[in-house]
Length: 133
Image 1: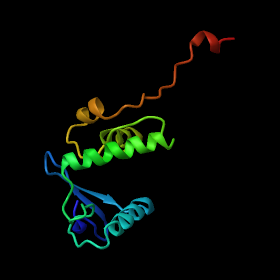
Image 2: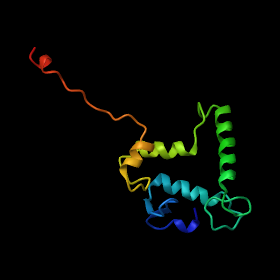
Image 3: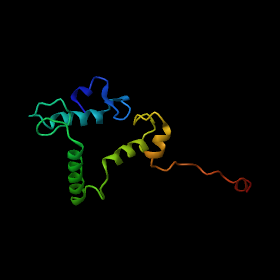
Image 4: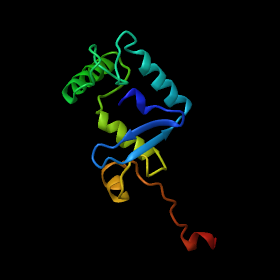
């Protein structure tokens, strides 16, 4: 993600698979996270929002190694009960959101099949026999 991805309206993201562009409108929480990310490598000039000590973007293996260390530490200090993957955050976001456009999928079936993990809440019917008492 590049620094230029942020603008007055929000955070612009291009999906990797289809190239579809999404604009995540600013919320106070998103703004706070992005502002914090901009200060993490204050001494390094980089076009990337999250970058290595050398100002380069993280490779997939570099990010995965960092994530594993983070998860191990978080479990050890009791911050979380069990590890989870970065992919799990994406699925949780999809499950928690009512906006099916959040992940940028063209087909809602993909979203429902692979990402929506929460059980759908339903209200049972009242049997007619109980109403007649």
